[in-house]
Structure formats: structure tokens, C-alpha cells
Amino acid sequence: MNLKNYTRLWVLILIALAWESYALNNNTFVSFFALLKENLPQFKNLNLAPDPGKTISLWYGWTGFGLMLLTNLYVIKKRWSPLRKLGKFPGWLDFHIFCGLVGPTFILFHTNFKIGGLVAMSFWCMVVSFSSGIIGRYFFTQIVSQTAELEKELLLHENSLKTFEHLKEQTLVIAGVSTAEHTGSEAGISAAVLNSLMGDVRLMFWMPKQARGLPVPIRDHLRLYAKTKRRMAYLGQFQSVMGYWHSFHLPFAVFMYIIAVIHIVTALLFRVAD
Image (cartoon, rainbow, N blue to C red):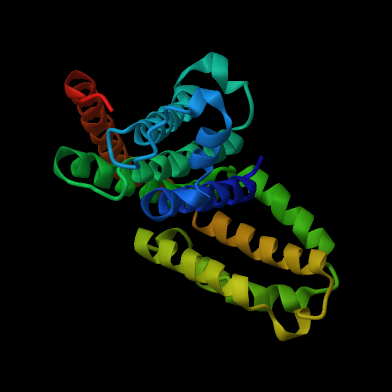
């Protein structure tokens, strides 16, 4: 499953949790958990209170923490050679991001939007960690292929666009590639990131006027051709960016886990029964 499908699944989970949160806090008549309580004997003693420390909140908390732990599978795969042959890195990264999205979502509803004290520190570290993770995924896609692979990919798109030379040049300008080709390795990291981001935004909304009536596959080739050219021009800069990004992302993730473990241990030691 790719990141687009993972994102759709996350949105569905978010909607379901938001609905349940509204129901438990305002109108249990429309609550899924209330439905389970009424119809299944196993749930007849379920406490429907959404407050932190209550049964449903604990379910959310354990689910969220479990998903956050699963994000480390990607880190283990990168460092443990037996796992390196199991699946491709981009697929593992997409799963890593999915768990990094869904885990914090469950944690948010675990708190019932009541965030304070030690929990607040862990929560905001989590927010910074998963936000930077999404940004890191964009950086990773810029460097996932080496120069030889990018040249192969470029040739594939060029062969599909042999009769559209004029459109190729116009699309390169929209994607910010003309700037990349002029500056190349001399461009600073900030300029490379800014040109890439702005180029991708422009490609989402604009195409050369003559290309708008062309078949979708041709337009896709134009976009991918321009992006590949830009990735080749800025490969060195994005490799440097990833180094800086790791230095930023890792401390927040580690601190988040430390505070989360302290919170869990404290909650288990001093928990008041429902």
C-alpha cells in the first residue's frame, strides 16, 4: 500500500475517532461504543466516560503507543541487515509515516483534548516529531535514487516526449528546473529546498497552455520529466538536508518516548480504578 492509500485510511480513522469523541462527550445515543454496550454482553460494564484514565481512553492510549513503537521497524530495517532484503525502503517509509500519523491521532483522543503537565511535553514532542517526519519524507524522495537511476528514469520520460520538445522546456520552467540547471551544485541548501517546493506547488496547479488538452499520461510524463531533472540538479543539496533533518528529528522522537514511558509507568502505579 502506498502513502496515498495510507493517508486515506488515516483520514477515515480520524473521522471515526472524531465522531466517537463528539458522541461520548455530547450524545452517547450515536456512539459506537454505546451500541456495543447495549448489544454485546462482553461490553455491558463498559464505562463510556471519555476522560483520561477511563477504559476507552486507555484503549486509545495503548493503541497509539503501540503504533508509535511500530514506527521503529523502519529504523531497525535500516540498521539490521537481515531485514534489509524484506521489502523496499520507500514502502517501509510509507508504513513508518502511517504509524507516525495514526499513533499520535489515537494519543490525541486518549487525552480527550486535555493536555497539561508532563503529558504536554511528550505530546508536543510527538507533534514536532510526526510533523518533521512528513517533511522528511519529501526530502527522502529527492535522494532515494542515485544519479544512474535518475538518468534511466529521465531517458524513459524523454522517449515518451519526443514530439513535445517545446512543452518539455516550458514545463521545466514551471518546475523551477531552469534555475536548478543554472545554479546546479552552487545553489545553497535553502535555495534548493525553496525552488523544489515552489516548483512542486506550481506543477500541481499549472501546466503549459498547449499541454492542457493532451492525454493524462503525456502530462504525467511532462511532470515527472521536470521533477527528475530537478532532482538530478539538487541531489547533493538534499543529501545535506537529510543530515540536518535527522539531527532535528531524532532528539524529539527520543524525548517523546522517554516522557511517554514515564507517563505510562506513573499512570500504572497510581491509577485509580474506574
